[in-house]
Length: 201
Ligand SMILES: Cc1cc2nc3c(=O)[nH]c(=O)nc-3n(C[C@H](O)[C@H](O)[C@H](O)COP(=O)(O)O)c2cc1C
Image (cartoon, rainbow, N blue to C red; front, side, top):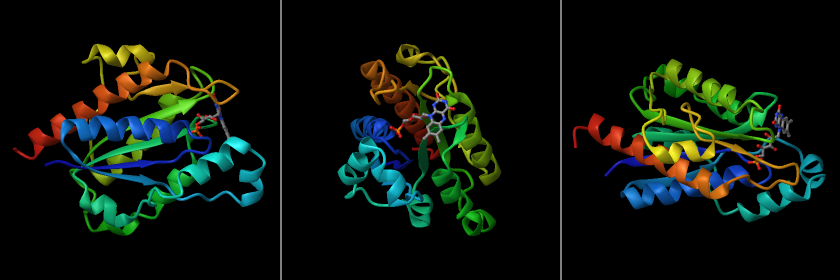
């Protein structure tokens, strides 16, 4: 059985929703799943200034924090971060930067990975965020599994071949949520199929 780590960062809950879409797809596939949130770095004063942010923190307090051990445990990774001026959130980068010891010991090599993102605009940097995650993954020696144009469900949320990209309205609502769910479903199942082949199962 493939072991999948879903490691996500989300401030206002859309990334949380995308991570749950990924969890559903992976469990449907028959994978063993660890859903983990990336630790928050922002101070309470910033979180309290945005009711959606505080709501997401409260709603996800039982989702465990991602640890290095989760990376060692997994055969495959889903990473997800919203756009922060076109790069991954600092929280996600900090988590990645904490893995130097694992990288040096070769413990991150040969893991399969795929990534998602969201932004307020349809072209608000999602592709750059996904590519920045893949850049780090290449340094780790991971095997990138993009959705490509393989499954027609990938087209529903804009057809980004690098990774599912959601658009979020200024009010914080995800555009075409069902289509994003479908695209994530196809992307995660493709990751798990490729991981199964790599494992020779
Ligand atoms: C500091 C910051 C920078 C952002 N930069 C952009 C941006 O450059 N373009 C854009 O479309 N959205 C930008 N956004 C909006 C976020 O990408 C959007 O809030 C996010 O996708 C929501 O995901 P979440 O609900 O999981 O936190 C930014 C948000 C913050 C807080």
